[in-house]
Length: 171
Image (tube, rainbow, N blue to C red):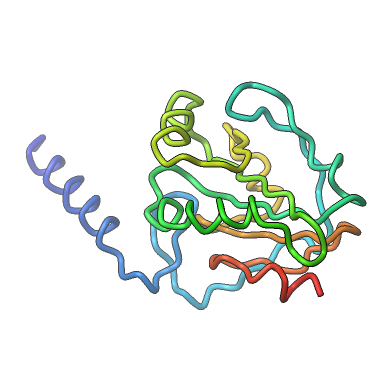
């Protein structure tokens, strides 16, 4: 009986790992239909989370001063790993409207695992720890990665699972 359970677990892991690239990634590691609606708050919701070094960071300190790109992601997510170089460039290069503050919110992983990922992938942007998934729930995140672009005034101007063209949404 135990062997059957192990085989079923292994089969489930293989199915999750080989989900087609067009399938939406859920926050729980599963796949959902790509046409699932992407909805959430239309205005920013404040939060304070520790960064990877334990320093508290509040979203509210950026609103009114500069646009903010929230990235809900996890170290186990292949799409998140692939996007690190693109996001590093976005973090370093100012847009025509000034710098966009990037805040990546890691979904429910240990600080040790996140720190190792940051070092291994040379992540240049701030990573915050959403250890209990509370902020992901407030923003109604249903898939990893989820990108939410908030303009200077606090309005959500972009929300999707693909990396946004920031300039297009802030002009």
